[in-house]
Length: 358
Length: 71
Image 1: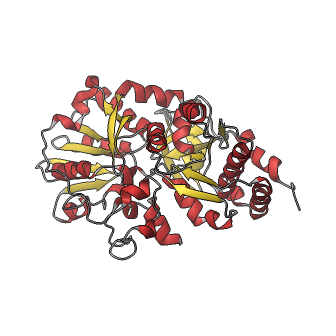
Image 2 (image 1 turned 120 degrees about the horizontal axis):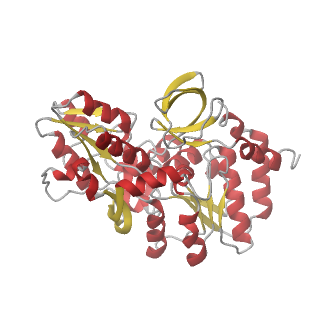
Image 3 (image 1 turned 90 degrees about the horizontal axis):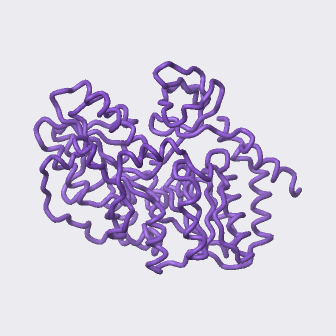
């Protein structure tokens, strides 16, 4: 496929790798904060071909993985109510809550439907005017404009039985939280390409200016990631720290202004709970009061205090403190077929990637 | 979840949607986030929405930078 196959060219990959080896001297940790990068790095064996002084660490880049258990419990509670249809991206359906999953609830008769797009969720609401249709609003900045867009459409077309239970998140505050915690040494960030297609490069500038850590916004194919690593190594070896864009075929410094305008119109920025990371200031999106009729929190729902999965170390995996094999459950009672923690459920989770490719 | 795939715009419709060809498969995409798109452009498709137009000149630069750099 055009714009994919040519970025997998073996000879060019070897050229970039040779250049990385020729300039890299310091022992460094580079963190990727996008699940699609995690998968691409594992699938293409990039960790194994880099010189031993360059260590890649996976961060909290998978929206499925950072969604708190309480939210899963809430959506399960919604699914048990009469007259409700739950719509969700497929990634969420197997994520364990305290006592169940949406997959189990569906098997027990709840009306839970997997959608490819927020537009499909809105259509289900349009086609079922006597049911309340709740969409699980999970995702980072790539997905947020698509959620904003359907809320605006629902208002315009008066589809009042549609609502969103929103826990959409913003990535740069999570990166700040990781740096402030000082639990892991990060010398450079591989920044998320598709999040940045929406937000541009400016939201990362504080990381370079205040923390003196280079950031490079990267594409997802092997040549993209290798070139990004080369750009980061170059900055680190020269003691520079700036934000650069490797993925220029997609990402503009100013991002996608139309998408940003939709996000700003529909959402306000709030403190948000991240699984394994706690509450991070100004890291989440909540629906503005103006659109409160489309906020599923208008319905009363109560859940018990969430129960963490005993022994699961997803939180430390998400913060880059441990690698999955250090978790006592990994590969034993927690596998992709029977996942216990969110990082094993999602195909973009670090544990799932480790399990599949290592 | 942030997965997005490049595709070629084949037809644009009045309702601000388009037919996009992705590896021989035709998908429908909403264009409201990138209204400046034209037929034959390549776009990035995420969850039913075209989120950006691919800059074809920028796309070639990586090859100019690295091809033949070493033997």
